[in-house]
Image (cartoon, rainbow, N blue to C red; front, side, top):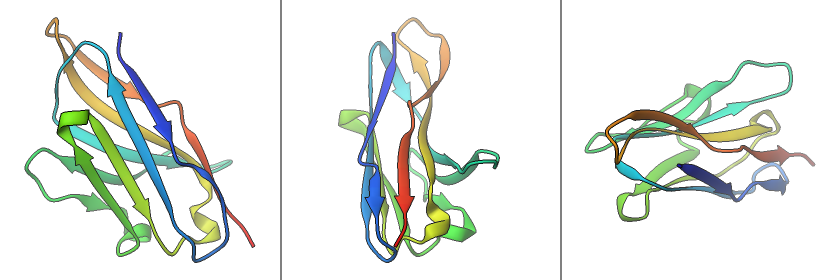
Amino acid sequence: QVQLVESGGGLVHPGESLRLSCAASGSIFSISDMAWYRQAPGEERELVAHIATGAFPNYADSVKGRFTISRDNDKNTVYLQMNSLKPEDTAVYYCNMPMRLSDGRRYNAWGQGTQVTVSS
C-alpha cells in the first residue's frame, strides 16, 4: 500500500512564507511526475506546480516567481516553497504522484491535503 503524507501547512500573514512537504512510502518502483494542486472553498482543484524527472518545473501563472517546487528522489519527497504569500493563496494543498508500483501496476497517489491560510 502506498501512502503520501503531507506536512507544513498553517496560518500565516500576507508576505510570509511556508514550505510544504509530501513524502511517499510503500511498494513504489518509480515516480516520474510530482505535483502540487490546491482547492479553495467553492472552487475546482487547480494545478499549482509540476515537476517531472529530468525536466524543468512548470507553474500556474498565479504563483510564478513566488513558489518553487523541488523533489528529492532518494526520499520520494516533493516540496513546495511558497514565498510572498497572498490571501488568494488560501486553499487546501494536495500533492500528487502518478507512479508505478513494485508489482508493475500504475497508481495515481494523492496526499491527504494540508490547509494553507493567508490572512492578516
